[in-house]
Length: 160
Image (cartoon, rainbow, N blue to C red; front, side):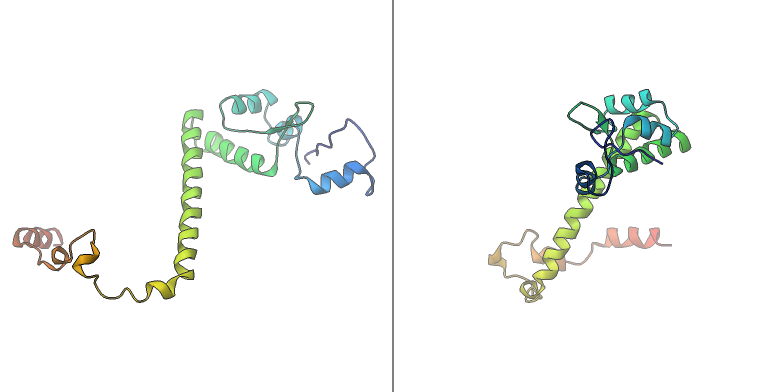
């Protein structure tokens, strides 16, 4: 079980204490020793992951590292990559960066899709080709032109 960081060395944890109320409002945070013990790591390993930029724990007023649930999820990914798959730290950094970019792209796609869904009525009247004076990016005549014989012959050979 991970120990929660309360901000004080010791104190009243009764349901009505200030520490208990603050902990309920704040996200749960864990100290470096609690995380190291839970994941069977040396605290120095966690410090190295922070130096390498793989983990970014927040800090208390006393400069104690505080790990959130999000940090722990990220640590689980790091340990899975290094322990189970044998990925080195440079590879872990690349994979984590790619995951973040993919998550960002996914959120951007979802926002775009929501926009399209909310404006479907506006787009529904675009069923006909725009007039030439509308300035289409690809001329319509090019899209309606037949495929050249050479390309047609090459594509039929590759489909066999």
